Length: 389
Image (tube, rainbow, N blue to C red; front, top):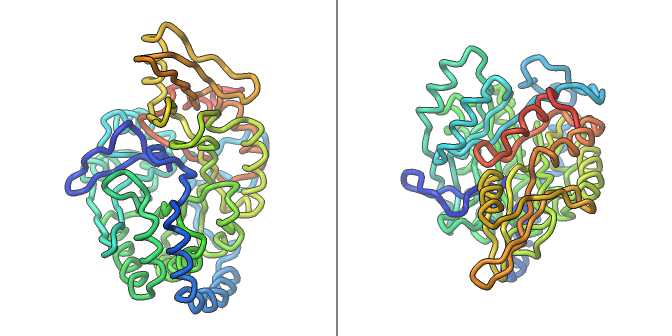
């Protein structure tokens, strides 16, 4: 998911980044093609074995998913039905913690970024969050805890080559599955969220083999296996992935991403096309649609991620204000500083109000927010149904 704030933040021995820092749809570099070719033969065996695993998992677990939505009805596509809200949390950000505390009762599942796996040695680093554990323990109606593992490197980029190498190795996949299982047990989690991004096309069979292993382990423990996946990306076979996991969080943002051309982050036309198609591919009961609430500031050769409030402050300082772009439905403003033209696009509460009817009509099982601390404060009445478009 977009991770948020304009720089990588320290977190103990490692540093966490925002998915927005590198873009939800960050493209793998030119070297990824070479990695993909080198890995293809190594993955053929995994792909063959995986076909058998997929069939078995789909048969055993169809219509048998545990419900983390605290009893809310699933599968009802009524336009006004409240949807369970998942929220992504970063403990290095004081604003993220403040938002979590303020909206705890509205959240069904909280997903903290607490682990990474990166590098040629596939180093897995997990740091527990005792403050979060204490907060949840004291809450009368605590959300389910779903710790997240990401392939974000220390420089804030996605570790495409390292992850591809990991997924091509059966021994490395088993080791990671052991580490993830131990992490969920240590954190007393209800499952895990895997956020593996910028994967070369040839790495997907290995990723699915890892998921097949994890799903078998988690099913015995009553845990949920979840992954984050982009929408509208042909390399991601959502239907096949859905047979291996309990939930897929569909990242319905970064139509224009960091490092790319400036533009709407999730235009309404694009959103209305990709979300229903992705939910249909996954299956409504397994699909959670993630919306963004943040901003990007593009200038020549550079992009800064911003919180919604920071973007509004910047607009005031520049003597302007965000306005709704009629063509895209996203908010936008422009300014000039130090001889450079800037284009700023936002995903705010107005955007969310346009997106929620599409999500409800798709029949998705829930909605997710990327992320706590970067969001427009007014997005919460939209998410919970207190405010209508």
